[in-house]
Image 1: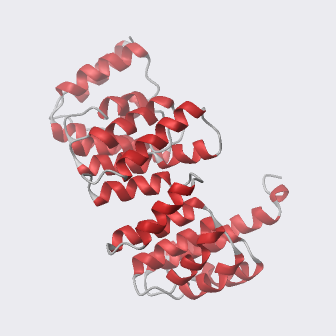
Image 2: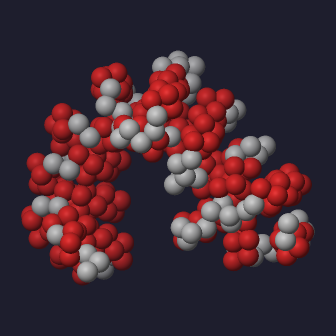
Length: 307
């Protein structure tokens, strides 16, 4: 093992030494020997320092896709503190390795903290999409679906974890999944109903459009937001009129979701409506409109990009 890496670990172990975010890149792409040393160090660190490191690693990975902190985050997944485990799940949001799916299933089913179980369930959604697209073997896909269904059908599990498991299972085109989504939409719990609308979008079945279009006019900002997201995922032009109305919504998050959805649908009407937003005083609105217009342009003429 490189002596410079050993020295860096010694610096990390000193509680009085401030953590240099830039130097945390030393924890990327570790060798097997380095992972063993990092695990020994991790177990000796105080809670506050472990939380800080995990949080910084997530931020760094978001800013630089070439950094690979998966081995360290794998250690953090088994941390004694739930907040650290949840942060590790967040940091692995782009990882598709088989061990990640297996770890998330284990945490979703057996972790002692609701927040961690819910985060693990959310993290499994990308694996459901992989299963739906046949990007994993039938045995793994079956194990994933069985685990998600067990949580959804568990009357002892909390509503928060069950709704996140439903969202995670929603990309699967199974009749039972559609029944679960429809049942959740009939719930008296507004959070469960919002999750149902989100799941309709992830399910991508045009049969959900009447409900989605109706909820674009909901009195609840959360429901309008989820409906806008779902409309973008289903990407049917019949949603354009409702999304255009949301460009004037009082809630900024709803407006941003509508802009993004219009970019997905990529109609000429959407393109015309988005151009004036490039001069909007809100930087987030401007950035979202620019990204949506780029998406529309790409969808219309993919060959014009990268030329």
